[in-house]
Image (tube, rainbow over all chains, first blue to last red; front, side, top):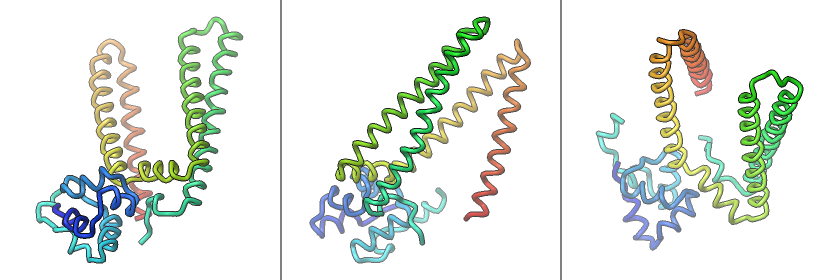
Length: 69
Length: 156
């Protein structure tokens, strides 16, 4: 799954550590989310969207292939 | 929607969680100590019994005792240091870490089942009772799975 987390984070001048601290996750989780290796849970997706003041659809780009996993 | 992660709560919640965990660790500590005492008493009062079993019991007991003691000391240190407590909870309840741990555990269980099956299959040629043991294990696994599935099915 592709995400816009990296772009949104940079736009707001946040580091991966800052974002991880605000979301109460490890930096490695942010790295994996940004690279699309890990798919966030609904709760984490909601928290990320809320943090950026956007909707989940604005942050996460749903790919049809994700449906099969 | 209710969050299942503990790390989004306040520090009070983390402290309570650690305190509950320490009670459990203390119980493990007592079980470990009791196992060692039981093994020593058995070897003294029943010298005709196989010593290997006593050593295995002592090993299990010592493992439980030291691990729980180490965790209790670790938790006590965490309770005194707020930053370390927060870091610990972030790492312990990070959803990616938990996801990886769950997948790794599933893989490990699968490997254990496969190896047990293979070992039992080969060993049963010489000792048929091993096959009964394996069959018993499979039955327990299926029953536990069925019960757990039904319980979660009702909950969700």
